[in-house]
Length: 536
Image (cartoon, rainbow, N blue to C red):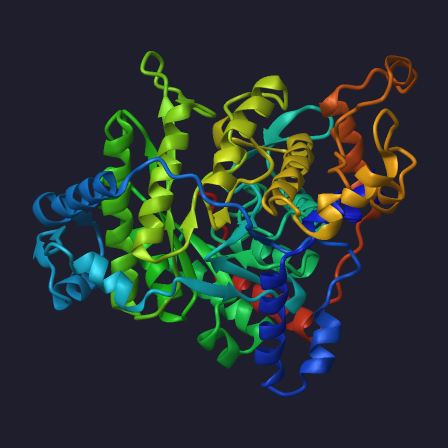
C-alpha cells in the first residue's frame, strides 16, 4: 500500500500544468538571488512521488443568482456601516482604521458603505504563490487552484493503539511526516496537533522547525501571539533569505474572528506582523450557526462576508498588496444540545454561497475539509467527511484546511482518519480533472476492435490504459469474501492503521542544508533560553 500511495494512487490526476508553471516561476525567482542551484539541490525532497496541486477542469457549483448575491453584499455593507465591527484591545489597529476613513467609536469601527470592498479590490491579489523550500512543492492559491492542507488545532490525538490522549511533539512530527508522504496533500499545514508536552510560550518554535525539517512542502505560521508570528518570519528568513521573504509569500497563517463581529488583540497582532512582512493570512470567521451567527444560511453568509471583509480590508491598510484569503468556517449545531454538527446540508450551502462572494470580491477562498463529529474513524466520520469534502471541490475552494485527520469536531487528530481522508483527497483530485475528451479518451478504436457481443478486457486500448484508467483506493477492500477472511477480516480503520505504520517506518527526511539547520537550531535555543517556561 505504501508503494501504491507513493505512486500517487491515480496517474490520471497528475495533470496540473498551472502548478508546474508556478514551480518554474518559483525556481526562476529563487535563482535570481545567486547560488540557487546548490541551495535547490540541498533543499529538494527525498524522492516521494507527489501530485501537483489541483487546477480544476470542472465548473464550480453555484447556489445563488446575481440578485441574491447583491442582497447578501448589501446586508454585509449594512453590518459594516450601521452595526460596526469591534476591534478589541489594539489601539494601533483603531488608529490605522481611522486614518483610512473608518468611523471609530471606542472599539467599535464603522466602515463607510463600500470602503472595505474597495480597499480589498484595489490591492489584494486574486492569485498568489506560496513558495516552499523545495520549489517543486510551491503552491498557487486562488483562481482555478485547490490546495489540500492537514487538520489544524486539535489538542488531542487518537493514536495507533486506539488511545485518545493529549498530543505531543512526537505526534506533531508524525503528522508532518504523513503529510509529506501523502501525494494528494499539497501543503504541510500548521498546528497539526497541539504538542502539549512543550511549554505554551515555546512550542511554536518546535512546530515551525518540524515543518521545515521533516517536510519540504509549504507551511503555516504561528498566530498565538505577535512575537510568535515574528519568530515564524525570522525562521523563514533563515531558510529563504531576508529579501526573498519580504518580496514573496513563504508562509500562510490562520487569523480567526471572534464571532459575532469581533476581532481581538491576539489575532490583530499576528495579522499585522504577517501583513507587514508580505505574508499571507487566512481571514476566517469561525461560526457555529445559531450561536455565533443567525440560524439561517443567508444570515451566516452575510455575517461571514462582513467579518471577513473587515479583516481583509484592515490587512490591506497595514500593507497594500499583502496576500489575504477569504476564509469561512461555518458549522451547524444541535439546537437541542448545543453540540456542533458536521456533514449537514446547511454548511454546504454556506460554502457554495460564500465561494461565489469570494470570487466576486476577487480574492482566494478557504473553506471545507474532512469535517466530522464522530469520536472514532467510523461510518459516521466517513459519511460526514465525504459530505463536506464533495462541496469543497464543487464549490471551488482554493485553500482547504482540515483536509485530513479531523475527528470529534476538531478536538482530535486521528492517525487512521488521516490516511482514510487522504484516500478521498486522491479521488477528488481525479474528479477535478473532468472528462478526458482526447482521442484516447473517446476510445473509438476499442469500440471498433471489440464490436458487438464481445468484451474489452483484451482490447489493445484496455491493455494500454488499464493501469491508469480508474482511481485505485489505498484503503478500500474490494477483494473476495474469502480473501478478506484470510487477511484477518480487517475493516477500514484497521487497514488504515497498518498503512500509517508502514508509512512512518519507511519515512525518509527531505534534504536540508546543514548550515540552515544549524542556524534554525541556534535561533530556537537562544529564544528558549531567553524566557522561562509557561504552560498557560
